[in-house]
Image 1 (cartoon, one colour):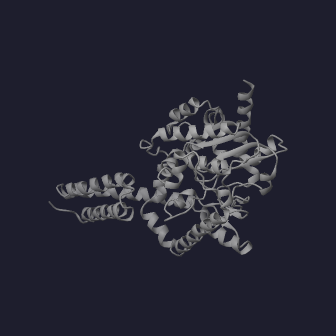
Image 2 (tube, one colour):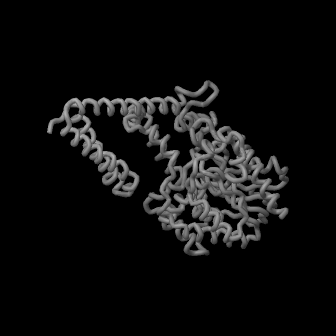
Image 3 (cartoon, helix red, strand yellow):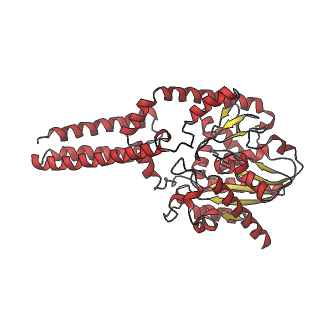
Length: 440
C-alpha cells in the first residue's frame, strides 16, 4: 500500500471536504438541511474510498488515473469560469444594462429617496422570535425596489397596505379583476404598468379597477391569509389566482410550520386585523430591511473572498445543473394544498365572485419546453377541478404553442420571471381563455 503524492493530496482534500460538509449540515444548519447535503456526503465518502483503493495500484496506473482526475477538475473549473463570466453583469453585459447589484442600486436610491425600501419575502419573517404579527404585505406608500432581470431595476410606489397598486385603486366603486399569487402575480422585475394588473387595464380598456394582492415569495397559505385580511368590501367580479408550479407547494410546506399562519387554516374566524395594523407592519418590515442591508454591507466588504469561495465550490456550475432537475417534492402532503384550496374557494364564493386558477409552469420550461417536468401537476389540477374552479393552463394553452419562449423571460438571468413581452402575451392568453370559458 503506497500513495503517490497526488493521490495522497486528493485523499486529504476529500477528507477535508467530508468534514466541511458535516460542519455545514450538522453544526451550522443543525441537521435541518441533511437531505440537501446527503449527495455531497455520498460523493466525498466514495472519493475517500477510491483514493485509498488507488494505493494498491501500480505507480504507473495511479499516475494515469491522476491525470484523468486533474483533467476532469480542470474541465469543471473551466465551465465554472464560463458561468461566472456569463452571470457577472460587470463583465458580460452590454453598456445599456444596469450592472449594479440590488444592494448597490438601493444605496444609490437612498440618496434620492431616504424612505425607499427593498422588497422582502414572507420567509424572512419565519424565524423572527416572539413576533406578535406576521406581515403579509410591504411598507405602505413607499418606493419599493424589486429586482433586475431585464437590464433595469424595477421599482413601484406601494399603496396604503404595501401592495403594488396606486393607492386610489382602493377608493374605486368596483373591482373587475382581483389578482393574487406570488412574484408572477405581483409583477416582479417590470414596472407596474407592464405586469398582469397593468396589462389587464390596457388590454381590456377597464374604466374601473384591477386590484393586485400578489406578494413575492408567497405560497398558497400566505395567499389565502392575504385574501382574508385584505379582500375589499366592494363588489369584485373576477378573482385570478396565479399558481406557480416551481415553488408554491414548497412554500406551502414551510408556511404551515408557522404558528400564526397555521391559525388561518385552523380557525375560519382568525384575523390579525392587518388593515388597522399597518404602522406595526412598517416597523417590522423596516427592521428586517435594516438587518438585510447590514448583511449586504458585510457581504460587499468580503465580496472578493466570497466570489473566490463560491468559485472553489463550483457554485455557478452547480446552480446551472440544478435547473435541469426537479426538486424533491415527495415530502409535500397534497392534502394540505387541497385543504387550502377548499378554504380559498369557499371564501371567494362567500364574496359572490368568480375565481379562475391560472397555472404557471416552472421557469426552466421556457428555456427548454421539451424537457419533461412534473411538479405534481396532474394532482394539483385534479384538486382544482374537484373544486369546480375553471383552469387556465399557461403551459398547455400558451407556452407549448409559442415559437420562441426564451424571448419572453428576463435576459439578466438564465432562468427568471417574464419580461415585458412575456407578461403582455400571458395576459392576452388569460383574457382569451376567460372569454372562452364564459362563452361555453
